[in-house]
Amino acid sequence: MLPAVRNTALMRGKTYIGIDFGTSTTVVSIVSYDEYDHKIHTKSLRLPQMLPDGTLYRSEIVPTVIAWLNGCILVGEGASQMKYQLKKGKNIWYSFKIVANT
Image 1 (spheres, rainbow, N blue to C red):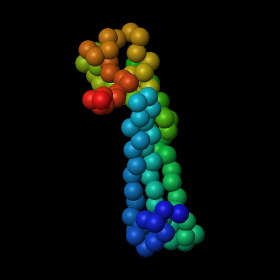
Image 2 (tube, rainbow, N blue to C red; image 1 turned 90 degrees about the vertical axis):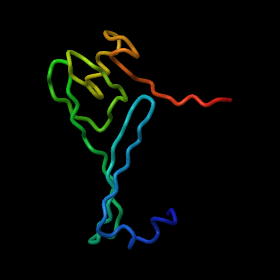
Image 3 (cartoon, helix red, strand yellow; image 1 turned 90 degrees about the horizontal axis):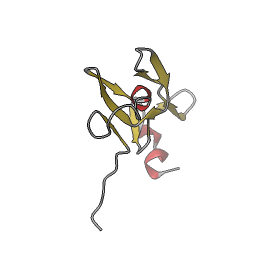
Image 4 (spheres, one colour; image 1 turned 45 degrees about the vertical axis):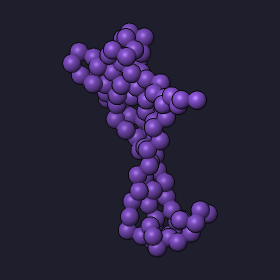
């Protein structure tokens, strides 16, 4: 175990949220300590994502895509479905990377 997790007293009564904002996908998880079974539990959240047709889609995996469509912001799966119908950098954004000077 990692040193910070070895002492579970640090986690009692607390919930932690982790966000993995990746280049192509994003995942949000919660971590908490269960005082009854003395275990650390991690759960990825099923996040709601609006599709272009207005349908609500839920998944633990959220495509790292943002789109501006008909005056509305789409994030995740709905935006990903519009990748090839919108113009990158104008009304859709994806493949975020920080470019380091080398």
